Amino acid sequence: MSHNNQKKIAVVNDISGFGRCSIAVSLPIISAMKIQCCPLPTSIFSNHSGFEEFFFDDYTDRMQIYIDNWKKLDLQFNGIATGFLGSEKQIEIVGRFLKDFKNDNTTVIIDPVMGDYGKPYATYTKEMCYEMKKLVSHADILTPNLTEACILTDMDYSETIGRKELEKIVYLLSEQGPEKIVITGLQRGDMVTNFVYEKGKDIKEISTKKIGKERSGTGDIFASIIAADAVNGVDFAKSVNKATEFISKCIVKSIEMRIPYTDGVCFEEFLTTLKSD
Image (tube, rainbow, N blue to C red; front, side):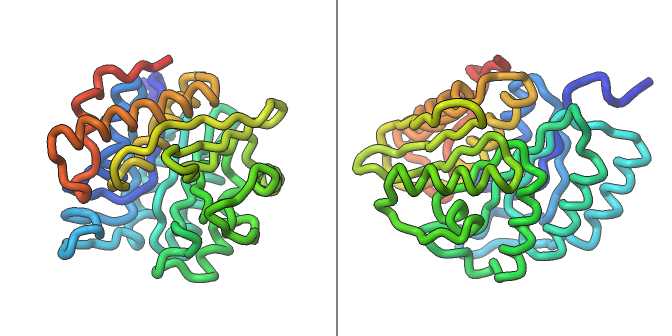
């Protein structure tokens, strides 16, 4: 019997036991959208690093052994989605993983978690930025925020960036490989906008009203819905709109339930509303 009779997405990210982010978010969301989620852990946290204290176990040295056993099973993936990668070595391992497992029936979704507010994260070195640029060449779909998009294209960051500059950025990114790109979380007064590029189609801007402060895991929710929809053949702009609306109602409910910001959003309240088309 084949192990490949059901749609599968491999998700490369860390596991956080508490705080609703990374694989802990991706697994239930992708599963709810009728796709098997296969985690490839990069590290294990008791709770994410936004808390004052946390347990952390680096999984880098065990990733290749883990992957090699997937090879023995002859696993084939309809999608591969990558999130935060914590070192140059991890990015290199994921690059090899994509070369080994991507085929004509695989959609690669890369969320290049590198920085925010115009600066790379403190742990992100120049070498890691260079390796991430190489990794992007494997992507079919790319979901950077503005900071990450600027790092990947060597463009200057500005909170008030205009449409012409955004168009230049997505065109530069598309030249690196991805045919579908969404620059997420652009701040436009009391609105948050997603800038959606798809090769051969008009650029779209999908906006929603800004609600409360930022919460952990919303990017993981967004990327997971995009990944599942891509494998299910859903129109890209429709998928971005679905993810945006889903996150918005989860944030509203989280505020109603007085969920701390560190605890992410209570997506469980609406998980059964997610559709596979």
